[in-house]
Length: 238
Image (cartoon, rainbow, N blue to C red; front, side, top):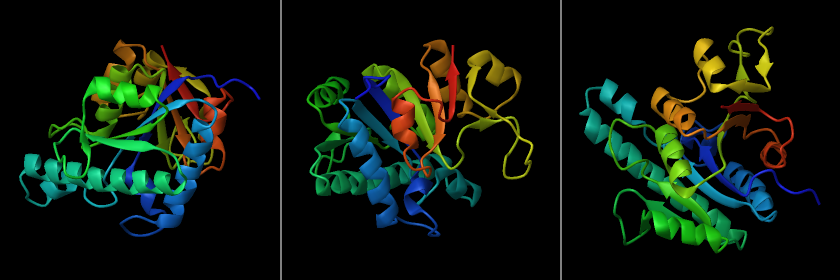
């Protein structure tokens, strides 16, 4: 068996990825498929941290747009990520894989509080760590949480799982001539105004030289190919 290209990763999953073709909520079949692919990667000896979004349940920015106080809306969105994280953890349990949910908001009756040293210990002991509640602060996205947690745990790469199989020169759904970038530097991505992650998350990854790979979580086997260092998605590097 080939050796994985990365020993420790941070996987960013959007809440929307969990609902599949449903209009909202959690699609159990989709969750089972995603978790199955993550378990396969874990069996290669890769230590896995996951940051999960909450957009399938509630999006803070949409709540704010409808007149809700932005900070309140963002806190509600953080609670939605906790629900998604618990659903993921239960799916790992069904696969007989140990996982832990660590929340930036303290809800100790149901999940552990986020403590960096505890997260690293769980990873070193072979558990999958699911980071919930974003950064614990309003006005920051789960992209930023992924960059931050990736830096804190010493991840070698941030994997951003999306609906599109990489970063393109234009929207491939609207422009059939759009080109997928196989590799691109942070500076090139900025110069071409490519939407890789939100600006805060992207700047953090650039400054600490933490590479990002954008790939499609809906493409069977894509996660494993990224982990093995194959040409999958788009690698954004320094």
